[in-house]
Image (cartoon, rainbow, N blue to C red; front, side, top):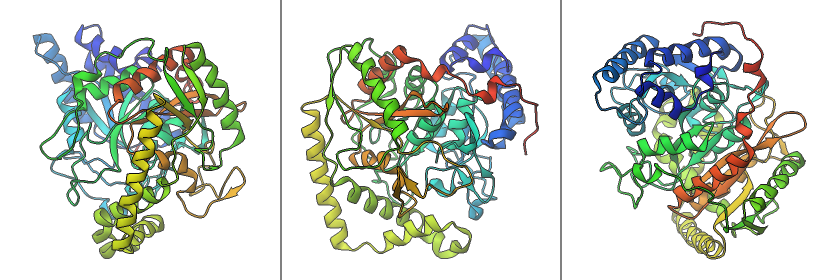
Length: 480
C-alpha cells in the first residue's frame, strides 16, 4: 500500500488542487488497494474503472487550466449499492434488481459528482438495506478488516469496510436503524446520521418519510464535515424544515467539549442488554470528556416510546416502498424484508394514531433532556463484531433475540428520536475488536455534534489504528 491510501479526503483533494498529486495517481492508488484487499473483505462488488480513468484525466486537465473545482475534486469513491448511479448497475443487493441500470443518479450521488467525486464502483449491502449485517444472494458477505471472519456491520458495511481497509478515505451511506453507526462501530470509523432533511432523500412513494437518512462514513470527523459541506442543503424535490447548508460545516469550532453538560447511559434507561466488554471500553472513555472540561453524569433521554415509534414507522416505510415488489417477486426476497413489509400492511388506523401520540411524547422527552444537557452518550452497538456466517446474533449479552432487529436496538432507539447521531471510534477490546461510542445532540445541532466528536477524536486518535488486513502484506487479486 502506498502513502496516498493513508491520506484523508481533505488532504487528497487539496493535494490535487495544488498539483502535488494528480487525480490519476489518486485513482490508481485506490484501484491498486481494491485489488490488494478486496478478495479478503468483499466490500466492492461492482467497478467502473474505465470511466473513472476518463474522469480523472478530465479532473487533472481542469486543475491545469485553473478551472473552478469542487470540494471533493478528484477524489475516487465507491458508492453504496442502495443508491442509484446512472449507467452503473444498482441492485440494492436484491435478485429482483440484479440487472437494473438506472438512467439518473440519486440526489446524494448527484451532489457528490458535482463536488468532484470520481465514481469507481459500488459497495455491498444487505438486501434493500435491511439489517445491520452485510450479506445477500447476489454478492455474498462483506467482512471486517480487523478480523475477516467477522461481520463488518451494515447496511453500510461495504463502505465502512472499504474505508477501514484504506481503499478510500470517505464514502456515502444511509441509516434507518443504525446502518451508518453500527458498521462504523464495527470497523473503527466515523458514521454520521444527520438531522432530518439536511441531506434530502427524495422518495417516489413518500416525500415525507423521515426515518431513513443519507450520510457519510470516514476515518476522521474533518472528512465527515467535508462531505457535509458538499452535500448538505435544501432541495425542491423534498419539503423539509432544514436550516443547514454546506457552508455551515466548513469550520468546526475548537475545544467544543469545554464546559458542556453530558448525559451518559449504558442501557438507555430501559435495561437494553450490551456486552460487558463494550461497556468496559466505553466507561473508560468518560475520562477524556472530563479532561476536556465537560461535566458528565449518568442520565438518559426517556426512551420508553421509542420502540413503538421506530417499529411502526419502519414497517410503514417498508410497506410503502417495497410492498409492490414483495407482491410481485416475493419469492426472490429475503424473509426479513417480507416480515417488515407484512408488518406494515397489518397496521391499522389505531396503530397510526398510537404511533403519532408516542412520537409526540418522545419529542417532549427529548426536549426535557436537552434543556439540561448538550450531548447524549451511549453504546453504538450492543454486540461486538460477530461470526460473518450468521444472519444475525441469536442473543445479546445472554438475552435471546426474538427478531433480526433486536441486536440493533441501541441504534434504533435513537433513530426514533430523529436526532443527529454519530458513532465514534472509542477504543478496542483486549482481543483487538473496535468499539463505537454513540453521540447525539438536539435537532439541527449537527455542527456542534461534529465539533464535540472532533474534540474527543483529537484526544484519542483511535481511528489511526489500522487493521491487520492492511499492515500485513496482501497478494493483489482481481475482483469480479
